[in-house]
Image (cartoon, rainbow, N blue to C red):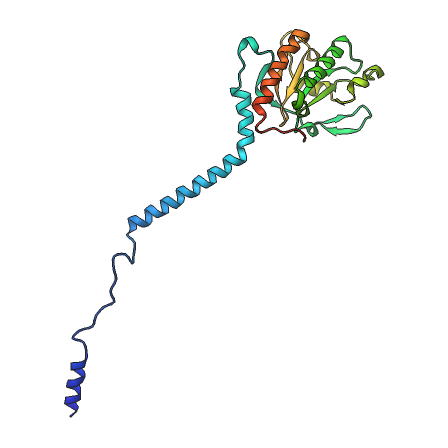
Length: 237
């Protein structure tokens, strides 16, 4: 009887053990894994590059304006400074003697005049055209600050105060100014007007001893530069 039971058990069992089935889709081929990893790596790099470009766009735009915005020679009154010179990290002083970091001027285009506090006729001429150039920029004048850097301790004449009401006047050591700004050969530092970008780089020098014709040419340079930078520069610090 036991033999019969053994016989029945054998009859009811499958003829052989069946292994678990596995299709070729259950495990990807090594080549497919490598391709997928490569695609993910490329996608990650593209995203990172897009983020970096978005962050760097204002800086790239500014340098495009400096190095690729080249007015025709017959129309260019200002001289581009290549490479631009960074503003020195020094303390300036107000006329009242208060210490002010020169870097606090960053964030605006700066139209600079340089001269002694006594302000001779040439100095007053520069301050006049400096004011006129800014005013002629219309709505863009809010993007430009007038700055007079006084290179000595001489007292500023009271007669100049009304004209300086909307200007920034700071005393800066003459040696510091000479190390940062530079006149044309054969000319003095105080003969020019200088243009500084919102990042604090001196990037343009206008011809010495400006007159009405020179101011008209300088205005065209400023017009083009304001247009070239309008996509990334806004008024105010």
